Amino acid sequence: MAQMNVNETVWNLTRSAQETSQAIAQSAVEAQERNTRYAESVLTNGIEVLKSHVESTRSLLEAVSGQAQKPQDMFQTVTNSAVSSSGAQHSVCPERRREWHPSSP
Image (tube, rainbow, N blue to C red; front, side, top):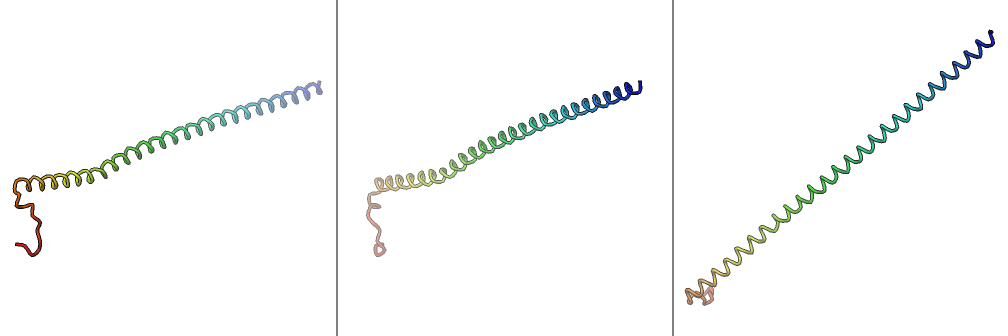
């Protein structure tokens, strides 16, 4: 009878150790799955943030390049306007066509 109690006790200890090991292994697997999901979400969110920054930078560059073109366009418009008004003045006042020389009045 004593031998049977010892065997049963050993069996219970072995089964308990096995269940504990399985619980620890299951917990480790679940932790690894959570870590994997977390890492994937961090990478996905990081990629989305980078895409957003790329779009924002692209929009900013387009806006800046458009604004850089505006002064050139304005200068061209003013220059064209000055040239055409100068031509209009010459056709209205033919005497203004003569060239100005520092010695002439």
